[in-house]
Amino acid sequence: MSDSIGTSPTPIGDAPISSPVEATGSAAGSLQNDGGILAVDAAAAAYDPESGFQRDEFGKETLAGTVQFHERHVFLCYKNPQVWPSHLESSESDRLPRLLSAAIKARKNEMNKSTRLTICEGEDGTDASNGDVLIFPDMIRYRRLTHFDVETFVEEALVKDTEWLPGSPTAITGAYVFVCAHGSRDKRCGTCGPALLNKFNEEIGVRGLQDQITVSGCSHIGGHKYAGNVIIFSPVNGEVSGHWYGYVAPDDVAVLLDQHIEKGEVVDHLWRGQLGLSEEDQKNALELKRQLANLTQQNSGGCCQGSNGNATCCQNGTQTETNSKSERAISEDGNDKIAPDEKVGSSARRSRSRKICHLPTLFETWEKEDTYAVLAVGLAGAAIFVAYSMYKHHHSK
Image (cartoon, rainbow, N blue to C red; front, side, top):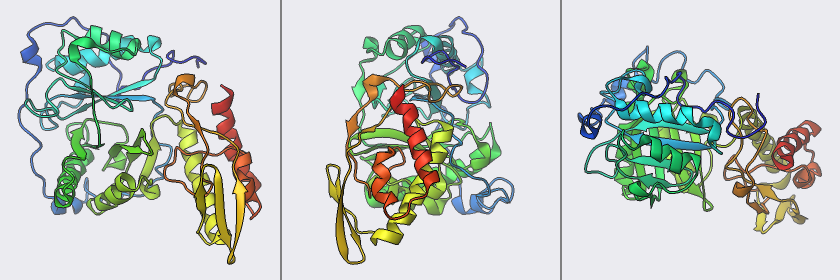
């Protein structure tokens, strides 16, 4: 295990990646598109007893803490799930994703951020043309990467964290939803993914949100048994982070749009984890949120108000005011899965006061002194220890 950033294995899917291979052939040969995702009957998929939403295993396992630690997520737009092989990152006939994944793995020890690569749909002439690269949480798009450019792109954009000028980086806005539809890798994703894509597109169309939310099928992201698997990148209070959801069914799509994207609130029972948090911190964050929510409901009547670190909570018809003096540090830098919270990049830290009664997202975490107000109404000592331990890691590095 390493204590320094960039010295642990970089997550790139869940499969080993071969060494870099010399690029051969034309760029055009590596950038093809054979059509979009075929329409799938969501109702039929829902009742598939082996791979659909009604399969026996669906919803049976705990989800929180099932996302491998990573700080940066790169999406390469390339063809579509109907033609992706099982292991796209090692396919000899798909040079661009193979060479990009190999180059990222080869340079992982030189990167300041643990980086994950996933493939998403690409179609020439659209906002997600073949070869386009999306980088989260940076919200940056690079256009038309070819296999000739892979080495320089990785060097400039991912190792040096500067601009890859040939790609003319542009900012991207709005919310992005990625749904695993990699059927050649696992039948469950191939059944549930297209059904969810249909439902997302349907709901977004009805609500007139086509210009605000982008939906795309993506390759394997780990956890086939949790299909449908969904990743959402959306701004919350000016910050963007990726949240992973599992066991998502078509009926959950409206909930994710209403609660997560519109209100900026995590849907707890579907939440797998978040970019930038270790697996243990994912579990602790959800458990602490639930404990605090229960105590707030029991003791304050759920009517907390206030801002800038000052909160006023109603208790039995009266109001009591508490002051929060601690700072919240939200990190987009850390370590790799092998050493998930050993180091946090200082450049990504932003300190701010928080409202003690508002938990819009699970990356809002808690210092020990932040919980004194809750202690006054009966917070268990165990919860305090969890909160303090989790933040001691982040603030001491």
